[in-house]
Image (cartoon, rainbow, N blue to C red; front, side, top):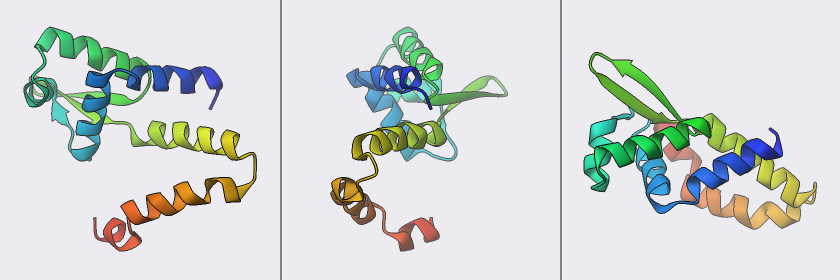
Length: 118
């Protein structure tokens, strides 16, 4: 992953509504949500939500799929993983001790038995 892609992803998430959208979509993985439902959940006008979803899509953080008359949006977890991995690899510079507290925090957040059951 290149720096420009990471900057684009982080810039997209650096706005409160878009961050809320992304977090909502992560909670609704793997099924995703129709655009109208996202707008209703977050109390955002449909045209404004469309703009936010477009920015997230251009950053590669959300994907859309037409199902009948609805467009379903999903978080692109691979892109999130690539972005976070880029930051950690660059940040730690191979010194695992620097990232160990972060990895420990993530392990407590998502224990292996929950992931396996999920």
